[in-house]
Image 1 (cartoon, rainbow, N blue to C red):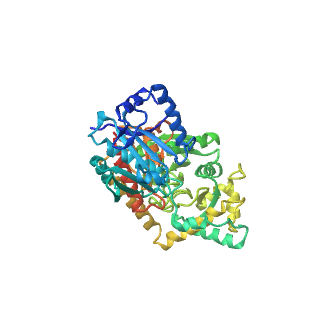
Image 2: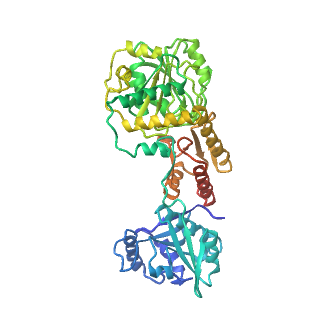
Image 3: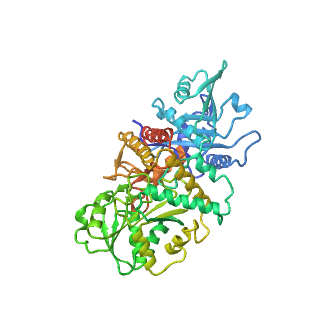
Length: 530
């Protein structure tokens, strides 16, 4: 049974283990040229330097093209030797093509040839080589079968060779983005950014901003009299604006901390010297009512509705009931929950809700949205100003005329306008949420046969957080990026190598999702998840 296989590019530091394998592979077995066979170890080291230079396009003989050399490694042991050329020449069309490979005689007849060839094709795709040409000697039926099994098309043959062509889907596509933000945008949104940024101190832009505010409040089901402002900042800036502008030093604040974003509220309260109590939730676990017992006399509660680092969607109905019963101001970070998960600002009696442009709104990053109920607006008006740039007083005042206090991320605001109108015209937030939920369910149902554990006991539709049971998460993130052209979300801190996250928001098609599923299952076949 094959163990963990991977390609390792030639290095000038390659050791005697590689050299020994190259001595076992003949000088021209099955028309594969192995010039190291019979070479002294000293000359082998010089050869490594030459091949390393060729991989950069340096020191190439006339008529040669850039060429990369790889070793097929099984748990650190070399079992095969491959070459990949950047393009074919007239000579290599007749003999060799883009790819050549050989397996150590000690490991032949065990399927390593097919695995090596597939990995070389992946490398070609990663290097944006759209077509791979390869030749097979007529007597080498095993290699012919490898080419056929790897999807090659027989395009020609003569008395000496078969000629195969591989068209690599996705070699020229953009990276697929399955992070939780920034996410992929629709063609309509991309078109907005395809134009120069317009001047914004105009009646036309003010009209767009007023429309943005109206649609955001409608989609949030905000209570009557609510306002919405747009800050040119990251989500953390919006979080800080709540702590600075709505809370004051007379408040007693409950902070729910179930991950890195809950901890960020803790840090902000410490920085701004708010009187707070931290309610900790175990990573991936739900918040329960008994954890709030004894905090009934507090005045405000800060919560990340969806703790994005763990994927937990908190029980907002329970939290809302606790806050309403005890007259506690509820301030909600819904940065990754807005649109993805059910959110009704009026029903949960939220004083303020924040979200960000780069999440389910699926436009460029740079804008945070702050929705304020009448009671939150009263708080902002009564509290002392402590910051100019993140001042909600100034944002509210300028918003009356459809403007912002300072130069905003104009193009992103125009994208938000296009996106909000698209959501309205395509059936509203509910329709959008159902589509995101469908993508999430499809992904989760189709990875149950893979060696992953689901982390969140109450997952948001926005993201699936996975713990690989056999290997490190960092390596999975790297392989998906480097070999499959797919981004997924790493975690930070002490969870960096423990979990990774797959986002389900943004302009993700069923075909895109299938590409990710196919990649993960291919990694399992290659032994990379074991």
